Image 1: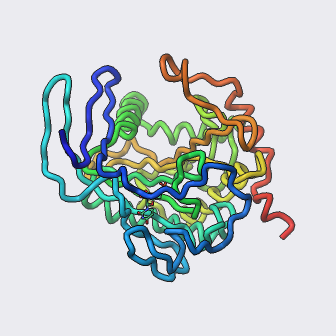
Image 2 (image 1 turned 90 degrees about the vertical axis):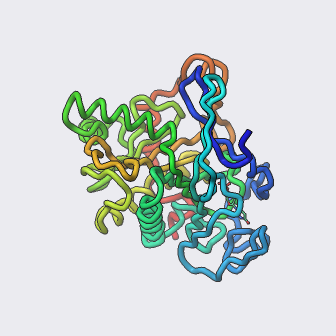
Length: 341
Ligand SMILES: O=C1CCN([C@@H]2O[C@H](COP(=O)(O)O)[C@@H](O)[C@H]2O)C(=O)N1
C-alpha cells in the first residue's frame, strides 16, 4: 500500500489512524530505567542541547532561548501525492504536513516548573508563532509535549513538538462536533460555560489565575488528568494577547509544579493544545484549551494502565476527580526543588 504518511479507516470504531511507515529509523535516547532526579544542565551526547550534532549530522546553533528545528524523522511530509482508496473495507487516503521539535530552553535538566515565567512565556510565544505560521497552510496544528521516559519521550531534554496536517485528526473532529452541538443548543461555547461553573463550584479547581483555570474535569479518565481552560472567549493560540500569555505562563508553572510536588518527582505526562481548525470561519463554538494526560496513580513508579475493561468497554477510575483535585490543590505551586532557594 502507501509508503508515505497516510491514514487508514477503522469501520468498527469510526476512527482513523495515521500511519508513517518511514519513521522506524528514528534514534532512541529515552531512559528505560529510573531517571536521576536532576539531570545535568548540558549533556554532550544530547541531540537537542545547544551546539551538539543531531543524528543527521546537522549541528544545533549555540541557542540561549527556545530552539525550533524541523523533525529529522517527521511523521508527516510536505510533498505527498494525493491518493486514496475507497474500498469499503480498506479505505485510505494520503495526508501531508510538517513536524517540528521545540526545545524549551538550552538547559538539558530544567523542565517547565523549573523555568522562569519569562522562559515559559517564550515557549508560549513560540507555540503562538508556529500555530499562526503553520495554520496558513494546514487545517490542524497539534502542539504537544511528551514528558518522561514513561510517556515514550525519546530524549530527556525538555522539549515539545508541533505536528501540522492537512487533515483534521479524530480527537479534534470529535471535540469540534461536540462543541458545535452545545453551541447550537445553548448559544454559548461549552468550555466557557464549564470554566464559569467550575470556578463557582471550586471542588475540581487545581489552579485559578485572572485569565486561566486548571481543573480535574468531571469526566477525567487518567487519575490526575487536568483541563486548562481560558476564562475568556478565545478560539486559537495566536489570538492570545500579551496579558493572557503572561498569565498562561503563571498558570503552567503552577500546574506543573503541583504535579511534581505530588510524588516529589518529575511528573510524566502527555499534554497538548486544542484550538479551532484553521481555514474555518464559523469557530464561535470553539474555546482553546489544553489537556494534561498523566499516567501516575499512587507514586512516582505506580501508574494506571488503560487495559482490559478500558479497552473493551469504557474507561474506569477509583480515585474521584474531586479527590484528585483536592490532592493537587493542597500542593505548593512552587516545585519542591525551587523552594527555600
Ligand atoms: O537528531 C534528532 C534526534 C531526535 N529528533 C526528533 O526529536 C523528537 C523527540 O521527541 P519525543 O521525545 O517526544 O519522541 C522525535 O520525534 C525525533 O524524531 C530529531 O528530529 N533529530
